Image (tube, rainbow, N blue to C red):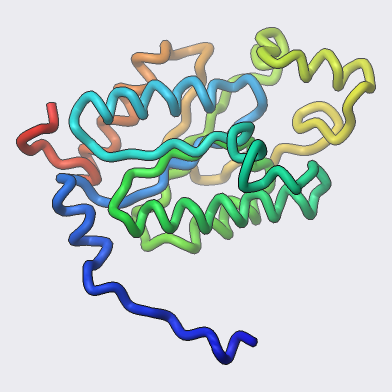
Length: 204
């Protein structure tokens, strides 16, 4: 079957699609425990970039499981497939010239490396939400830690399932040490320093 599938080259390149937006395509991958601040910071950065005139798209773990990945559960194999699909979708958005923000626990190093390898060097930005487990459990925004401690749900990352720490993340944030605005400022500065966002007309 694969021998009958041929890649079709587009006449407009990803670089051209990004240039007209005064930015470079990239994937900002937020990883960390449940309650570490992934979605909160990703959403805040999304707003900040939008207000500056940049073109973004945010993929959130729970939202994606309502649609594209609603057929997947939480076994190890299904978690891998969940991340694989998100990586491929993120690549499509980046090919459209967008800055993509993805907020997923993504506990396995191999899965994060798999997504990184889909992108040219410098376009995968791993943001490790290094918020301590105690703080995440105290927040427990979805009540999942309480259920995990009570044995009502199993294979919960940080309780009875492992989270493999990133070895060399591009950015590390601890939301017990930095406010939302401070986290956003650090990320915007990172994007500027690496010229992934360009200060041009329409961008503040």
